[in-house]
Amino acid sequence: MTEIKQGDTVRIHYTGTLLDGQTFDSSEGRDPLEFVVGSGQIIPGLDSAMPGLSLGDKKRVEIACVDAYGPINPAMRQEIPREGIPDDIPLEPGTQLQMQAPDGQAVPVTVVGADEATVTLDANHPLAGQDLVFEIEVVSIN
Image 1 (cartoon, rainbow, N blue to C red):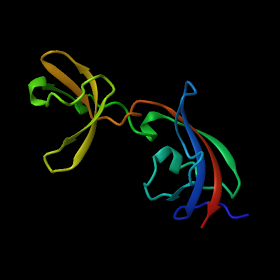
Image 2: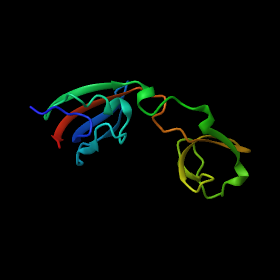
Image 3: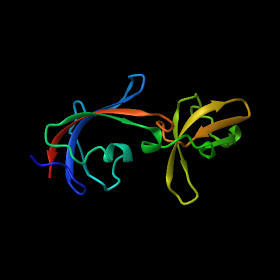
C-alpha cells in the first residue's frame, strides 16, 4: 500500500478540537482538505504527522501550540484611542475586525477589551497559545 511522503498531494477529512474537546473546525459536510505534504500549506504539527500514513488510515494527532499557530505574542496586542474608531463599529469583546497594515495588507484583529478611552485589539491568530487535537482520515494520495 502506498505511504504518504513529502511532496504528495493528499486529501483528508478532519475534526480539530481543543484539549477540552471543543471543536474549532471540521471538514464534516464539506470536501476533504487538500494540500501538498511538506509545502507549508497547513500547520507544521499536522503536516509532519502525514508521512507514513496510507489511504484509509485514521489517526489522532496532538499538536503543541508551537507546532500549530504559535504562542501568544504580546506584541500583537495593541491599545488604540477609542476616538480613532468610527461610532458604527461594534467594540464588544470577541468582535472580529480588519485593520490595514502600513504595507496595505488587511490584518484580522479581535476586540479583547474596551473602555471609554481605549480599545485593545489582538492580531494573534484566534488559536495562538492553544494545544490542538486533530482526528484525521486519509481519503486520497496523489
